[in-house]
Image (cartoon, rainbow, N blue to C red):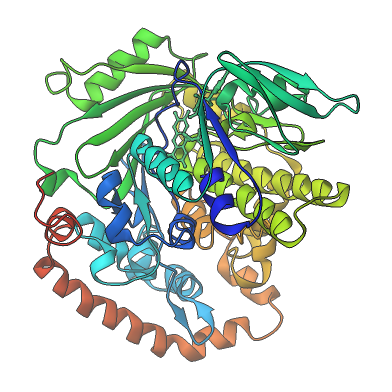
Length: 504
Ligand SMILES: Cc1cc2nc3c(=O)[nH]c(=O)nc-3n(C[C@H](O)[C@H](O)[C@H](O)COP(=O)(O)OP(=O)(O)OC[C@H]3O[C@@H](n4cnc5c(N)ncnc54)[C@H](O)[C@@H]3O)c2cc1C
């Protein structure tokens, strides 16, 4: 991703991309968030061109099962922006209904009130054939890497297949060159460390400290597997499914030719064998009896600084928060975008760029971490040692404590969004995500009446005045929902379109 983006957007620099044939890529990371659409489009490649080569599908939403309580309805995080009524998000109208109208007394009514995406997802359809905005991709990580590598080469990147054996330092503590197994040292002005969890350059050679997030996020291991489809029409859902388990959660990411799945869990609460047994039971022991599974250790946290001297760590080498919100590749994209902006304008950088970059990365990680913590710390579950620990011992950062205090007085939307978002890196925003997750986790503003009485400004009269408009929007949604059954399934839509008849 880094090489392809730089090669496309920064002229007159020479880029070498080094990778080892002895050290495989991590091979997971197949669920993305909407900015990925801009990333791919920014490379100037169309979906028709790249998606079939990478077995990519559309992702409309993320769906969470049983993070707050066992047996709860599903929590949805649709990517399509929430409807607006007279300048206010529908969530505010829903809140009014929730407090005043018995028909909306179940907080899970929120999801269908705000968009029609959950219903599209439930019926196995895709947003792509209804709307053109608010989606991301599920994609074969290996194939996407290959595709971007070839693209990079075609745009002038030198591709070196060799293993780096040593890092040679400059006197000022920066990197002079990397030594490799089968060739001369490679010198450079700027080294981008994409070496994965081992963080060969920034972590090892430059010795930058690693700040662990283990007090905030307990999951440190994953078991990954790939399953063939038995019925792609049913199984190729257009959302990432995250299902809470006794000591973590399972992802299900349907790409075009298979289902990617994995159990992300806490090794302090489950041994590898216990986790695999639970995972196999979840998937159906019969179905997976011949499927091999891969254990992956996850280093959760971040290097204190991502850019030190002439070395920038991007990807797992710079940090990683667990994949519950599919943010790994987005962090890559955000970082590369900023570096591109810097190099594009001056083909050089200053200490001010480095400092600003590090501050942006810090803020991005903080927001993502805080957001992830809400999926856990607000749980009501106590049915396993893991969930008890999650509920009672998860560390709440000061920044999250502020956010949670604010979220008790009103929905995090519009005016206060900067508290929750706006990380300054590639315009990253969870947008409506906080509202979807906090509602699902039963963390709503306190008694609406009290809050309303304290409101200043036009908030409440505005909502009341415009409720007929909000009702009209609901009527439109109801109308649209009636048409959903006649739409092709997500699979049929892809097969008859981008995939030109190819079977899954
Ligand atoms: C369990 C799990 C689930 C994830 N799920 C998601 C998700 O759903 N969505 C998402 O966006 N992200 C996800 N991620 C993150 C995502 O997988 C990574 O951000 C992404 O794959 C980038 O990895 P990387 O390139 O940093 O590291 P790697 O894939 O590990 O690549 C490291 C590269 O460095 C090279 N290398 C290493 N050592 C040497 C050496 N000595 N000499 C030469 N080359 C070397 C290797 O050959 C390799 O090419 C997930 C991560 C994990 C662990």
